[in-house]
Image 1 (cartoon, rainbow, N blue to C red):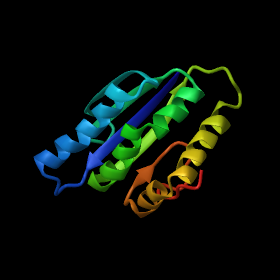
Image 2 (image 1 turned 90 degrees about the vertical axis):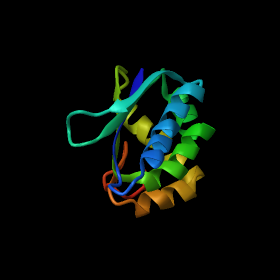
Image 3 (image 1 turned 180 degrees about the vertical axis):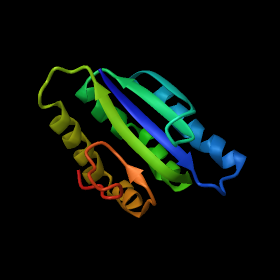
Length: 140
């Protein structure tokens, strides 16, 4: 299993409607992407972020499906602009010693297939994702 975790802080000037739209985009990914086995979206009471989301995905094929699902692509295209800070990371129970590299490869393919998302990430104020050494560089 792969537990894909998102932590986010909205921009301070975001309206309540925009905040709800951002959180709804996260929920839509969990509700519509078949690769997501379960999910939670809600307040992040500790750790310096305001909200968080966890998506439980069965395997690497599911992870690839999740990243490229239309709801997730829409989330990235519309949601990145709402955020002051964003961090994504993965926790897995896989015994595969190559799992880190494989996750990074899936991420790299996603950004290569969606250069418009890579451009948004590069312009984001604070954006950290799996396989990304630099917070705003979508190189992997």
